[in-house]
Image (cartoon, rainbow, N blue to C red):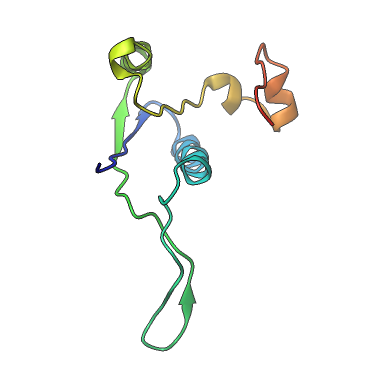
Amino acid sequence: MEKKCVMVIDSELSTGLIANTSAILALTLGKTIEGIIGPDVKDASEQIHAGITTTPIPILKGNNEKIKELRSNLYKEEFSDLFVVDFSDAAQMTKNYQEYTKKNITVIGK
């Protein structure tokens, strides 16, 4: 089965927050989706380059309202086979993971 991926980011965020959000989402995908990062490769001069994503990841923009609607729809039963990562404003406004988890968040797993 072919895997597809897309990021939808609030277009009203500053460029820095858009870059940070996409980086955070990409790290979570890399950790979670087996095989999304390819093996290291060598170029013609024998320099090694770390593996990069094997899946294109288009970045789309939306506004706050559209993103909330999309998120709500993605948690419906018909989309239960999708892997969804969200990065809330609660996460954006904290300086570290410990602070984030104290904002009405329940940590599950290890």
